[in-house]
Length: 505
Ligand code: MSP
Image 1 (cartoon, rainbow, N blue to C red):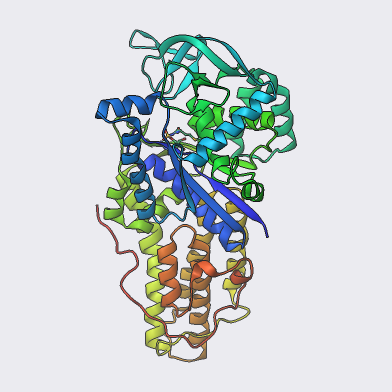
Image 2 (cartoon, rainbow, N blue to C red; image 1 turned 90 degrees about the vertical axis):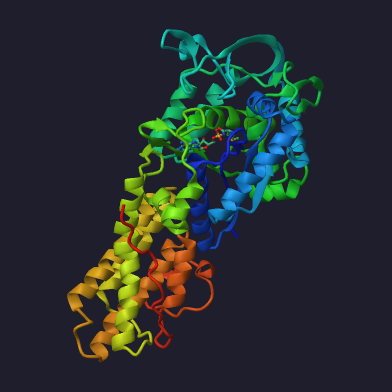
């Protein structure tokens, strides 16, 4: 059986979950659900990044110990993902013993390989990024020198004895590996940015701090705690038992990582080099997403433009929100979040297209077919539309592009609405011609329910049940389940409440 292991970044617990975090997590969830429809044994892991200076400072500001503080915030992420119907199998916290064991194991392997050495660090650090910057990377803002290019605020200078990871030794090995795995970085334009960083030359990076207590001690020199990025990246191995359960780790590794474009350097440069040093295979793929912007700026606690995803669900419904997040922006590009955009997409794709089709089919079947589902015709013109929808959706999910996959799926919805309009079964007398048209529409809805289930699981199940199918839509297996002709005459078709009532602004 094919095994697929999908991860999200683990989120800093200095802030509560916001729309930006929800975005990456929903994309990962949909990719996971598609993989399960294909019959792959799939593990989906998310979690929280709890060590480092940024968290220590946030805990100090809240008047709590870092452990108390992280214990308070981490469950809020877990609860938000439950509310967003995220099918993660695990939730890893970097304060857990299994994570600490994995970090110790990875550090020790890199140290034993001779790639971690003691040196003196003198330089500039952005606490918000938990990242070091060279002078040429820093910017002047409003006359203030040495500002972080991402967070637009001054960096800190510090000097101390640190252990360094010899990243500079890995340039050729990394370029070589990426040349042999040309589709590992998705989408390509984001991957090119990562390759540009490697080609531009690699500096060793510090992997330990002595001036900080909130972290994991180095196994061979416990005066030092582990640099938070070395610590955090290792979660991906820890969650599959690296350092504690060898078999589990071998079964699942390597992973597909979903990340934002802001953390490419750590994931696509540091991480594979750390793994190579430790004798572990690099990740399978990276899906690099853009940012959701609000008013042209990245949504973040620092910018003060945070949108709470849970508020949006109250307005637009869970699946309305999930659909918007997945369909609106091609993965890899930046998207501008607006409330008007959210409602506009909901009304056009969900209320007018899918919702309307489901309601219309149930109404006509009630009136013209006695409320009983009829069989599709084997040579229906919709059969070709269904094949195209499946083939294009499958290719797009495989390429980690949910917006394209949903557009392909909606192609079948549009074709079915057009088929009904052309045949106008609501005007015809009951009989074999109407039965055939309605059978075609029911069969198209059956396939649509399967294809849209990774994005809008609850709605997909509702459509499934309304057309009289039994069991769970998520238990269907592709490609067989998408083959034209699967709908059998006989089940009771029900109308139910509107799936997506129109929303006026
Ligand atoms: N803790 C690190 C990641 C460690 S992974 C080993 C971190 N955390 S974060 O909470 O600041 O952000 C993590 C990710 O959240 C980003 O890379 C991105 O995927 C997602 N997003 C956060 N804000 C976002 C937007 N405004 N828009 C889209 N995604 C954003 O970095």
